[in-house]
Image (tube, rainbow, N blue to C red; front, side):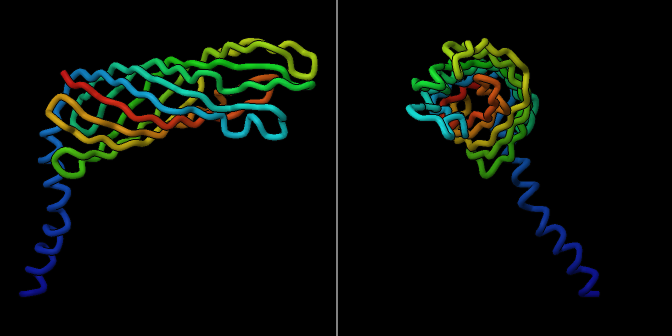
Length: 194
């Protein structure tokens, strides 16, 4: 008899954190969101074997989204990565300024009443403004759509205002002289809920 009672109690004990997480998630709200973020973006390997080269710059992002449930949302945004490649030597004298329009799905796991861990996956439409030459050949501008993903944490200060910090990876965003490279972006910002 005790074995039959222990198994359901054990299952209930395992389920309680999930149930309480769902109850707390209801406090995080749904509706329209506006995000403003700033940080640093870096092309991962763009400057490998290139002399006098810089591959990072300040980045900023603005986003508009909708939180369908406390755990699922959709976000569209614009990101400016600044100059993700700049070199001035005999073989590579070129720069690349990059920005992207993005659309992503966000999944959030509430941890407590105000804290959440989230991930995102989506697509980014890059607009790369390239100038200069690579080994004497002029570089062209580059426009493509590629996947991107991210992960972050957020902390709700009030019901309608939260702080967040995030890492994002943009696939093959840097592309100058035919050499493609991923761009990593680290940012911190605020999210307003309406």
